[in-house]
Every structure is written in C-alpha cells, then in structure tokens.
Amino acid sequence: MFDKVQAAAERLQGQARRTPVMTSRTLNTRAGAEVFLKCENLQRVGAFKFRGAYNAISQLSDEQKACGVLAFSSGNHAQAVAYVGQLLGVKTTIVMPDNAPSTKRLATQGYGGSVILYDPQKEDREVVARTLAEEHGYTLIPPYDNVNVLVGQGTAALELHEDVANLDVLLVPVGGGGLISGSAIATKGVNPSCKVIGVEPEVANDAYLSFKTKELLAIKNPPTIADGTRTPSLGKITFPLVLEYVDDFRTVSEDAIKEAVRFLFYHLKIVVEPSGALGVAALLSGALSVSGRVGVILSGGNIDAPTMTAILSEG
Image 1 (cartoon, rainbow, N blue to C red):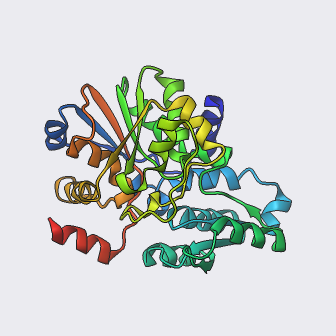
Image 2: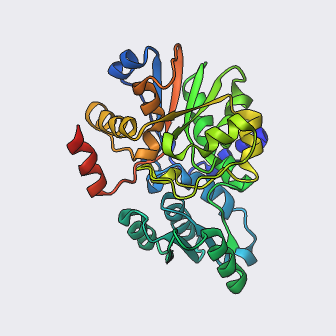
C-alpha cells in the first residue's frame, strides 16, 4: 500500500499545495514535547480532502468523467470533489446533510457542485447517493472508504515525514478513517517506529471503540461540534487498515476541542475547524502523555463565522 501513497504523491505534484509545518514554543511547553503542525487547513479548499478527491477523480476513465461523479459529505469532501471536478471539467453532484455548515454548502456550490440536501435524522446518505448514482450513471467517490481516496489523503503525512525527520508520534483526527489509514500507511512506510495515534471526540468515539473491541461499531449523528467526525463508523476498507497500521486512539471532550481551536487562533494566528484541532486538543488536555518529536495533522480550516464566534466568546 505504501507504493500507492508514493504514486499518489507524484500525481498530486503541482496540484495539491505542499502545506507548511508550523511550530509553537508555547505548545511545546504545554505538551512537554517538540510539536510539528502539518497545516492542511491551508490546503486547496481548506482541507486535506483535496488530496484524495484529486487522486481518485484524476484516475477515472474518459467515459466515467463524461458521465460525472457523485459524492456524499458534510462539507470538506464535498468541496474537494466539486473543486476537482471544476479543475478537470467533470460534472459533480454532492449529497449533503441539511444541517451541514452553510459555509461548506455555499463553497461547494461556488465550485460548481450541484448540491442535493437530505435529512440525516430520516435518511441514510449512502442510500440516497447510491440511488442517484444508479439513476444517472454517476461514478461514486466516497469520502473515505476508497483506496484511491485514502492513499491520496496519506500524502499529507508523507510530506510531514519528509519535512520533519524522526518523528516519534503522529496524531491524526479520525472521522471515517481515510486520513488516518493513509497517514498510518505512509508513516509505517517511512518510519516504522513512529507511533500513529487517532484522536476522536468523546461523544463520537466509534473508531476508538471499534479499535479497542476489534468489532466495527457505529454511532449515528453524534452531537459533536467537530462536524467532520460525525461519520457513523469506520468503513469496510478503512477499519481493517486501522487495525493493521494504527497504534492507539485517544478521545477528547467538546470543551477541549474548543480550547484547541482558540489556542491555534490566538497563539499561531491560524483558523482551524474543530475536527482539524483534535490532535492539539489531545496535547493541551493531557489526553495522552508524549515526549520527543510529535507530528500533528491539522486537517482543515473550514469553520463558519457563527461557530467560530461562539467558540472564541467562550474563552
């Protein structure tokens, strides 16, 4: 699988931004380690999702591209697929929950994506999406449970290891498992001794529970501010990869997530959405004890103004 991550990195050259790595002496002191932040909040469309979407869509046949693609997503994958479709001249249709952040919906439409809303309390997004795909002949590009998508996501971690040698630990936010699967494959390919640890909200800890029990468990519509982690479970492809490549998991409270967003805003002057701040939340809250050199993937920066204002006003 590592060779697929390497191939994706070559495919993404000149397409994905090589995002910067940031450091903070204050964060190092608080964490008791050297911390290196991979800023995928500064990636195209504001999230790591661009990597997987481009890697997957660019490999489709001319016939598949002509028929168009379809995705289901609460936001970042939606924007990524729509933007890649715009770049490659491919029609895109996106199934989004009606409670998705308005900034993500509007951005998706701004990139040319046709948005179809559904009620997550009453409908299953995969059923809605697959029905549409069958009706119209679209190629489905899943947000995480797809090999080409997840190895594309892993290129963020590959870049981090290339820029910062000899990491001891890598902290990765977890939703459906695409980012952590790809990141873990990349990490073990470059530095097998580096521990890969997934971080989830306490109220959306399906991956944590699945990892501990070795059974795929689901939590539907978890009430977390980290909207990118509201996926009900790991995927059929990502779950076995998580069991094979990931070393451990930690969970963090909603308050810890908000504190991490505030910390990154005030101390590093960067905007990171709640899902993207999970690794920093784990460090600041003491959810895990670390030492040495610690990498953290800040997975995205797409947060709407009301949510950001509310988080900052609590500080």
